Amino acid sequence: MLVYPPGHGHMPLNNPSFVTAKVTMADNKAKSTKPVNKTPPKSPSDPAKDRAAKRLSYDSNSSHEGAMAGEVSALEEAFRKFAIHGDTRATGKEMHGKNWSKLCKDCHVIDGKNVTVTDVDIVFSKIKGKSSRTITFEQFKEALQELSKKRFKDKSDEEAVQEIYKLIEGKAPIISGVTKAISSPTVSRLTDTSKFTGSHKERFDPSGKGKGKAGREDLVDASGYVSGYKHAGTYDHKVQGSK
Image 1 (cartoon, one colour):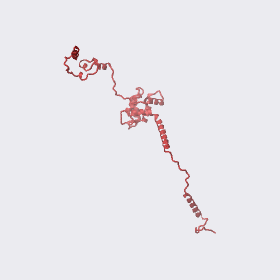
Image 2 (spheres, helix red, strand yellow):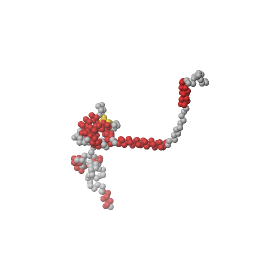
Image 3 (cartoon, helix red, strand yellow):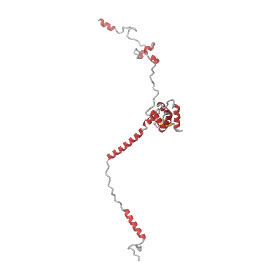
Image 4 (cartoon, helix red, strand yellow):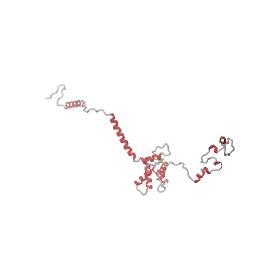
């Protein structure tokens, strides 16, 4: 005989659908219950400590980056100085062929025997891009590696590269075109005023200093004395002495 629960019509207690619905209702009720937050609240942080920690982190990162940059700083600095030489619009990141040749001359990469001007031009054309007129710093090092094999034939590849780096590190473009004083017997004779004759002699005093207008023009003597009179200006002295 089947027994039915009150309020459920004719659904038997051993019906699987009834059991499943009851279990589902229990699970939903358990999920709807919010879990209790047992995590303790965070204590307020100290702004001064936070700023100090950030500053220490920034300083450590900056010093690390500076140490890494210092490994090639001397070579890069020389590259930058030659790259911007003669061009106010240059950024120092790329180098033209003219400045490349000047670097090789000023730093004695060109020795006239193992490395010539032609070798330098050939390497530059080989390293740069087909449509480019400049080389970057990385291409610059490739070009030096090519030249080091010719410049230092008696050394290994690594030693040759280090030697050619030493020729360039810390160097700067040599400024040419500065006028220097020429010292020669001919020039000295032409500038010696004591040997001047004629009207040129009258333009300088015995010490070699120019007389200015007095040496270029004939000034009228309005003193009343005859030209060339040796006792000019002594009259008053003689008259007062006789009294």
